[in-house]
Image (cartoon, helix red, strand yellow):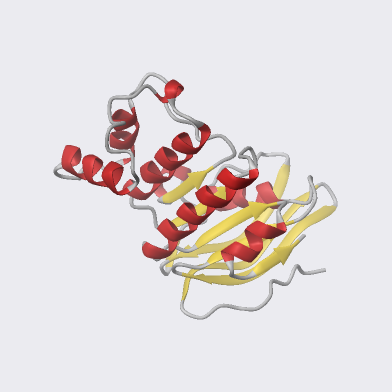
Length: 216
């Protein structure tokens, strides 16, 4: 039985064709869809339904216990056979995963492509825009949950990804902070015109995303 999103999107940037993921004899995902630049496609379902497995397949790091097939194209480039580091995907997880041995600026610099110029100026500019102008030299351990999430988002956007995968990035935030960070993350994705896939248990996330919804 195929999983059908609702409804289809125009102007595709991320295209999944006949993506099939199974664990043993159990089919978890059977999906065809296209996701436009700036659209946030939400995948919902109970634990074990295949949500995170779908992201892992797209990212190129699905565990060997699963069987998977299908085509993943980003901006008309077939990436299915590429290693994770060559797919140019931005990833946000439940934990911001900031490097503890680097300052805020060091974490952001890590996200910048090697070819980037004026790195210090770019980092200063994005910190200022995010209301974190005085945080460049801060130790990540001293940041609040919301501040860590904002730094993780800035690092992702600075890396110039071609698409974004979001694995429950708001689940550990309290209600008010969750709403604020979600708005900032979604705004950043839309302004950068990046296709994105969000895994979530929260209907409010799907409503805020406003794109296609797949229920597993």
